[in-house]
Image (cartoon, rainbow, N blue to C red; front, side, top):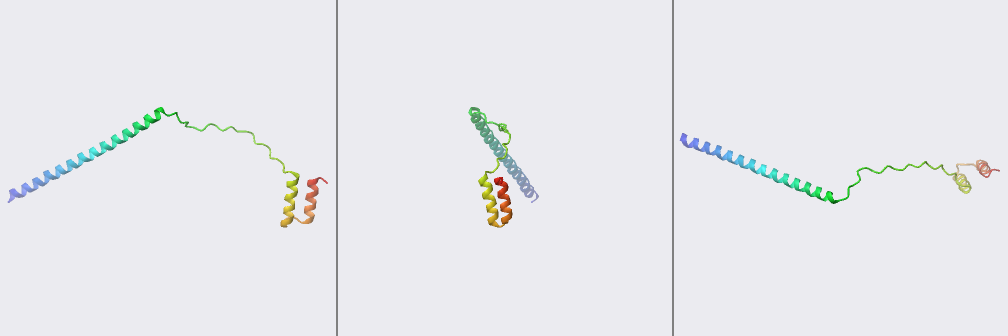
Length: 106
């Protein structure tokens, strides 16, 4: 009976080792296949970019112009603004008359 048990243990060890070795070979083949896929994708990408015009990597420097001085609002804009303030109640009638005289220069 001792011989049978040793044979079973030996068979299990050999079978387990063969299974482990087969699995490692399969994983290695899978890794190699994935590497080949990545390499071919990179080669395709480089061959396509070889014939394409080069892309600009940096933005062109912006041309800075001196800021234009702010334009003064027109006379009618100023008058309509103070009238709006009078209508909303921000200005009183006296303040409105004073602002209007100042704008008109009278």
